[in-house]
Length: 211
Ligand code: SF4
Image (tube, rainbow, N blue to C red):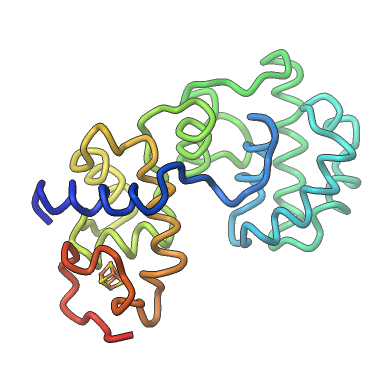
């Protein structure tokens, strides 16, 4: 896609949804961090079902640490990888409570040093909570970026770098959410819904469907 097409692409998505939001439910930066940490290989709906009870029991690093690893595990046992997620979450809460005064740090290095927090999770927290121009590339964004010609890349990091480079500044803070929602509901993996796609004209995919 060229510059004009990329601008048109995001203008259309912005007009349709001026204030896009993550579908994960959270009420603080800490809750957002927990929800994203738990979302690996789980749906947002599944994570929300678990966190609604977990956050009632504990919604700060200190109180979640005091719950203990086994109790955390009970709250999240409906999620995939719950054993390792509980272990990571417990250790992360301990570090946040003891080293960061119960606050979620606002820089990449500190975030990525927390157990269970990789580049993608750090990007989501930096973007969503701290409004930094970062781009978390999940499976939807990776597929959509390559398929449409928006930001082709062989791996997640290449796509991330291309997106940051190509997306105009005015869209960068919300681009992550527009792309995820578009990939989740329209440009889906098996049969993209090209027939009802708002960015049909800007997209370079060669095998567009009629649906
Ligand atoms: S036209 Fe089809 S392939 Fe292109 S973005 Fe829309 S749904 Fe995806």
